[in-house]
Image 1: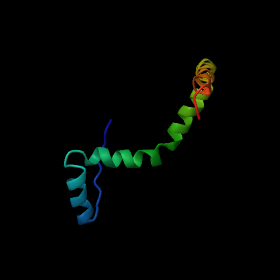
Image 2: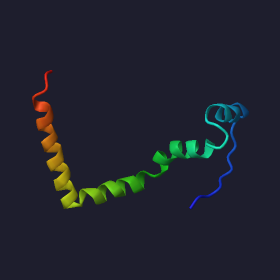
Image 3: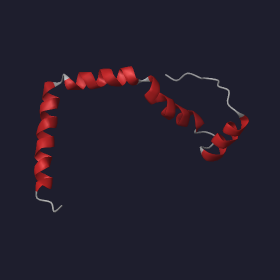
Length: 76
């Protein structure tokens, strides 16, 4: 669900957003900048949940170890 938010910015910032980002893309741009700073707890919880998935972790380790062989013969 989306929520509407009213913010106040300097007039030069406002004009710059319209010029550089575009009129109908400012909200998405601002959200992409803010999201990593406010969603860290959810991201950490997701990483912890993935780490407890033993099948996934085993598959990831197998994949990582198999790719090591791919680069072992490459010239340096």
